[in-house]
Image (cartoon, rainbow, N blue to C red; front, side, top):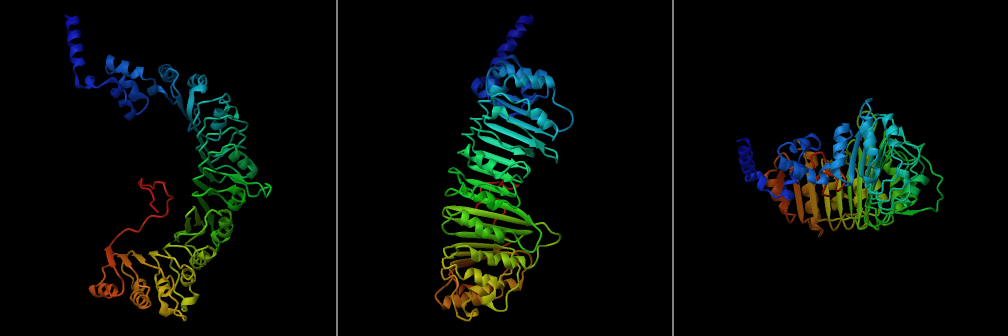
Length: 496
């Protein structure tokens, strides 16, 4: 009777909806489950499921080395497939030695290796990985404690010909590795200036000719003995991000930045003068591929952030205010005037955010006038949460003694005015619009975004002198504090 029941159950299982799914489709289900225990539990559902899941070797390639029995089972079922190994030792408790020894026997199969630990555990882990890993594509070593970890010598024999991504956080190393012919991403974060030189970095770049994404954070020396004539070409570079003090020009002096690349610099200051003022001229000299500036974004928010774009590349600089309280009141004025160091005669787009400097009694002496005067090709001006009066007076031909029409090609003006309506932010708008129209420089579009509504008369008067005037209630200004292609906390990407 029991044999009959087993036969009936087998037939019922065969015709169950889940068992009608083709095996090659069913075996994809674990991709959407948590690795580890969830996968093991699925193999215990029934004999059919177990056969299908165990037969797919790629499901068993992730090793966390937390349990020797589990590690051995995964290695056996992976049947020679490339392995992804994650060793995370957050506290003083070491990883199970038996599990680690099992994994070390298969270094030649490593496709990805993640090592997370403290300044004490990382060196002890790294020293085990000294044999070649010809399949390794991703290597991520991070120190989770505040102290850095010194990694001496080489890892995997120093020859990582298949490596594509290298991330080192809090790791002190002299980068003696060679043959990085396929490396495309380098994320070197939190080292020490006394342990790596500009020469070593340049040597590393030369051994990694395909690098396209380089991020260096607190890993650069304060000085360099590199010969002035030495230069390394980064032919495939898309993004170079440097966060360190004060070495930006040291490295850029020895790099050829290709057309279309974006260079970003981040540094902190606590004086009355932002480092942007010092770095800007030298940086542009090094970025000769930016033949002319087509757009500029300038923001004053706990410091200064500047984005410069050209047809052949870009420069993004952030200097965060590290002092107590708010940045010095004259900082906005000085930074705005620093735009005069740029070749802005061909600039078509300018965005200014949180510029609060008071309007100058004499328009010609204001920072806004001095900046806008050479921008003969400016087509669009956006002012976000600014003291608009300085800019509106600068654009008004009747406000300067020579009656000069500043930015004669200006077509679009956008004003973001958050909070309760501030009359001073609208002061001079109608007069400026009327005066420009009378001199043949009529604006095509004015967009006003604020939380307090405009009166019908105000809108009617503006529309008499501009082709199109639009008012929006409570609209959100564009984000520009994240890098292109980098998602913000909500997962959205910058579109500027």
